[in-house]
Each structure stands twice: as structure tokens, then as C-alpha cells.
Length: 407
Image (cartoon, rainbow, N blue to C red; front, side, top):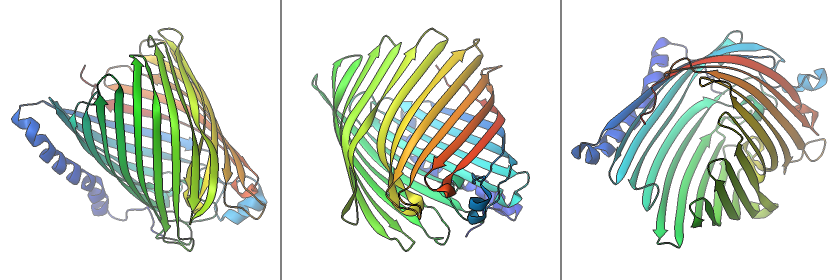
């Protein structure tokens, strides 16, 4: 497998600058019409340093018998992430364009073979108003370390690359409502043990109609279609997924917001049904006071499980609170519990997981440009397959500098 370690300063510098060339060049072309009308261009740079410590870097089981099967150590480590990013945006009458790029350098204290560079770039152009008739096009690309949570037994690590293209539009039909349509393409190259060329390609399309009965009330329906293909491993297969849904949104004086979606799903793989049933969810956001807010939510969805070229049905419960202690100090806590059922069996039988994640954070903004965050998290996964059980705790601190957005 490809090792995520740059062996020379020249390669490191190339990885740092290369992601900026394409988006900045294409943005220049997109800005030409607006430049002729002397539309302003806004630059928003940011930089961040994040220091994180975890007691279970590779998310491995603590049971010695299962740990021996993973070929990965149960180890703690501290890693530092250096981030630099820039967003360029131009909003003019009848159109807007943007380019966004971020590069990250991640260095580990003990497992230095994991040191690597990551990047993410996005650019887009919109004709029309986002609140009315419009047509938007967006392109994206990125590279990052393959998440350890997706690997069960491997002692080498790789970088995954992804690309995306998106075309979306909206048409207002008088007072009746509005139609929206979306077409999207995702390509993911994510090496896994024994399959260095493993890749997933997905095409997504959706069509919906929204009725706005009141300014603070919307409801409607949407039909989504997904077609995908797994390649680069023995289990080469195609899959499709249909998701028709109804949705409802209600907002009350910016104090309460309720979102509800309800529909069904039918997923097939190589022509055989693998998942059917009810999907959807509901979430409620409430502003208790000018300083305190909370949210709760529940959802059920069917998603791809790329690690085994299959799918999983996820039921998610979540909630959180946020308290503005002062104008510059905010305390937040979040929790989620995900129950997952997989369509790929293990030697122990059908696999079912319960994954919990809890976190707390404290944000301090001493100036408009600077945000300092201290955080801690707890992860725990139980599974019918002991190989996937793990427990991990982490904490860290980050320093972020960003130019404030213009009002």
C-alpha cells in the first residue's frame, strides 16, 4: 500500500501548493463577468494549529485475543495538525462564484510513519439567486488518511482520494412553490488491506417540490436515486438505491425549528434486494434564552459500508446543548448513539454494532480574529463481532485565526 509519508521537502512543498492551482485558475475565469461589472471580491484566509491526544490511536479492541487478530497495536499517541486555508468569493447581481481550499499537515509524536499531508478544494458558480430561480455547479477534490475506524486488520496505512461534481437548480412556480433538482457524481479511491486499487463510484440524482404555505412553514416531497459501483477488489459489484420522502419544516420566531422527513428505501446489489424499509428522521432545535440552546434528533438511513463493499442500516439518536457563558465564551456538549445492522455476515453471524460518541468543548474568542477551543471526547463501540469492539478517549486544544466575515 501507498505510505502516507513524504520523504523529501520538495515533495512536501509540492503537496502544499498543488491544490491551489486549479481552483484559483478556474475561479479567475468564473469572476471575469462579475469583474466587468466591478463586483467586489472577498478574501477570507484562515490558519489553525490543533494538538490532539488519544489513548487508542488505531481504535483497536482491548481484548488481547482480538487484538492479536488485528495486527495493529493498542497504543496512545499525540499528533499535531497544521492547517492553512483560503476562501475567495464574489457576489454580484445575478451570479456568484467561490473557491475554497485547505491544506493540512499532520505529524505524530510516536508513529512518525503516519506523518502526511491532506488537502481539500472546492469551487462553484451560481447563476441567479439562491432564494429564487438559480442554477449552480460545484467541483471538489480531496485527500486524507483512510479512517482507522474502517479498518479491522492491517498494519499499513494509505491515503484515500475523492472527487465530486454537482449540478443543482431551483425553479419558482409563482405562489405555488418551487421545484429543485440535483445531479451529483462521487469518486472515492480508498485502499484497503489486500486491495490497493479499491474504488467506489456513485451517481446521485433527486427531484423535489417544496410548498411554502407560510414564511416559516414548508412541506413537500422528494425522490432520490443512487447508482454505485465497487471496483478494485474480488467483490466487484453494482448497487442502486431509491429513496422517496415527504418532509416538513416549521420555524417559530427563530426560537424553535422542527424538521421532519419520512419515506422508504429500496437498495439492491447486483440485482438482489439488500435493504428495504422505512427511513427518515426528525430533529428539534430550541433557543431557550439568548444564551442557551439545545437540539435533539433521531433518524434511520441506509448507507454504503465501503470497507466490505456492502451496506448498513443506521438508526441514530443525538442531542446537544450550548451555553454562551459570556459574549466570548461558549460551552457545548453533544452525544450520539448509532445502532448499525450490516448486510455482510461475520464468522460470528450477522454483525450489529452500537457506536456512542460524546464530546464537550469550550470556545473562547478573545478577539474577532482568534478562537481557542479546548475539547474532550469519548468513543465506544460494542459489536456482535468482538473484532470491532473498541473504547477510546481523546482531548485536545486548537488555535484558529480567521478573518471575520463582512456583515
